[in-house]
Amino acid sequence: MHPTWHAPTPLEYFASLVERDSDFPLFEAAVCLAQDEYPDLDLQKVTHQVDALTARVRRRVAADAGSLQRLQVLNQFFFRELGFGVNANDYYAADNSYIHQVLATRRGIPVSLAVLWLEIASGMGLSVRGISFPGHFLVKVNLPIGQAIIDPATGKSLSAEQLSEMLSQVHPDQAPLSSWDVAGSPYLRSAAPRDILVRMLRNLKGIFQAEGDWERMLAVQERLVVLLPEVWAEYRDRGLAHAALGHSDQAVADLECYLVHSDDLADSDLIAERLEALRNTR
Image (cartoon, rainbow, N blue to C red):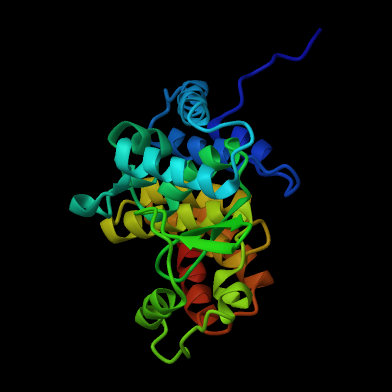
């Protein structure tokens, strides 16, 4: 007898996408984050929508067009014609992190706008990467004249002075960046696709924690543990979500895992106390 085939769960599908860092499908993995909230989401439809946008903008540039011209045409199309931008009226809505909703409303947050912009820019043949800048996700593009740092919320190129101002809001003691520092600054390094997904998920985690919505936070934590299997704090946070939902066995397993592996002494006593209390309730 052949084993019964079953369709992968959203978490299993996500795990298959993010298993390896080589050929990491950032856009596809980012789209499927919404499956916890929108279980009937048609992932292929979202991909086709973005392919269609890419095809539209590619038709506007000659095959031999340079990268600067491609970038200008893309930003005109994405930010001015289509009107993509930040959802200033409801910045902390979870939908701002879900790519299919960003496509539908043309409103998001910098990291979700960046993921969409990066996908279209790559399809236009541009050399682009994300930057996990403190407090505000950025993108960069390689041009013949050098590297341009761009705000994915507006499409505007940022100067060293503007970047320094943004950095000072998060790190007041940080020395200003000179134009020479920009290329080599650790704050402006290219972000790995895995790190971009982590940033998206931690944004959602923060939203659901603030709302005390442990069920939705648990779904996010499941993905973070898959994405970061050796970051023990994510097991701790998943355990605390399980505990809040009354899942004592799962909570105990996760908190034990955290205490065994973590070197963080700051909260180990607190977690050990919580663990003991959970064991006593089983």
